[in-house]
Image (cartoon, rainbow, N blue to C red):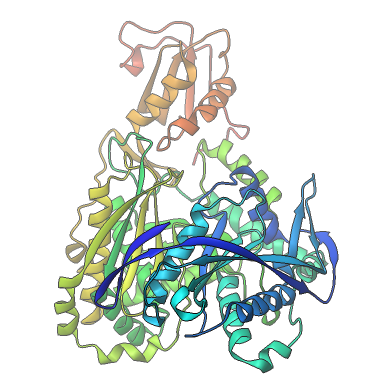
Length: 593
């Protein structure tokens, strides 16, 4: 494998040649077996359904000092695996999956050699990036909880230039990776660190804790929160009018030094985290363009609020739903509100997956839509509270000048069931924010670029001082997608009647069907002819629910009118004959949301 990269002022070709694998023995303090934690079970179920998902395996660099022999890296790797049980855990399938921790074993350290030439510490970022890519592209049919690889330099007596790892997402989450990187650096750099034994809370301990009555009550309260907010979350937060799925997806990455400087100034002024500042700007832009006074959307929580979980290595992160009210707020107020809304949601982000899925299924049938619980915003950077004061050294005029260095890059991605999401990859020095369109037919590249640039504009403007709510629309510079007689706000969702018509046509064919924004005083009514298979509203609703998968922006009709025949002019709601049956088709017919 080779990769052209910048190294200092010269351009190098990083060529990795697999050489050998070194067996690394490890021995932990205990073996054991038990149920999965709720966090593990959440990821395990998802990965079992989609083992090749982009995030099923997390690949990262592990820090190494300037000069380090391979045998020292191998020793540190063995100690790291011995210390953290999740790295020596396998998962046993079944109706109730279980985890099994091995007391001891052997881990392979894969060694790749760099090409000829002089290599040094200045090459480490490029080499580490290439090594991470090599792990991504080389197969691992065993799907081990961890893979480790190093790149060695022939001109330096095979000293290690970079180290990388691939972790199963069932074993670790993003916060865990930060802990592993810190521990690995400590094991390489400090003899005292190596003497420390296994420490802290482990996944088997967490599973036992979650079985206690107190933790069960917390999980039930989390389900109540998810249930309440799921009744208000829109089917499709963002899609351009007339959207049609294309089967293609991409990410646009915004890299902005100006935005990073601005975020620091706003964080210092508002005394909030920099991540919250970025989220507030995203919320303001999306609410403006998508025409929502309030955004109700999924977020991700690290679930590390208790002291014993601060240094825990295992999958704890789960999602919840935040409600952020945009209307009537200044930008600084929105930053503080977004932070508190996410914190409130995060208090309710540890739940039983099976119970949550059962709740979601009932709500989906009642509301006549499908809900996607993937996070709309995900921060992959550790928060540094130095941002509260460090931002004051940037002057607004310096930030304005830095705008000239902003770049947008795009790359293809696997199609996602989420029309739009944002991933914050870096915030120190340069803001790197990914906007991911799950399908460019719903959110085209140009639309995504305009949203990212609007986020940057808003952040840079906020660096000069707080922004009144009345000023933000002009600074955002995007017009709201307008309401029309055929685009209505219903049950917290913007609905194109044409999209619902396509849904019903797919669902009830060969019946004749016509969808009306309003008819007989009711919203979103479908009139259709009876067939052998569809003679009741319940049957029509069931068929429409099944067809939602292929109609990503539609919701089902609120009311079904089933007639023996269609009129000569089906587009006239008054022309349809007396119905054979009529109703919502829902189990709870009184639900008129």
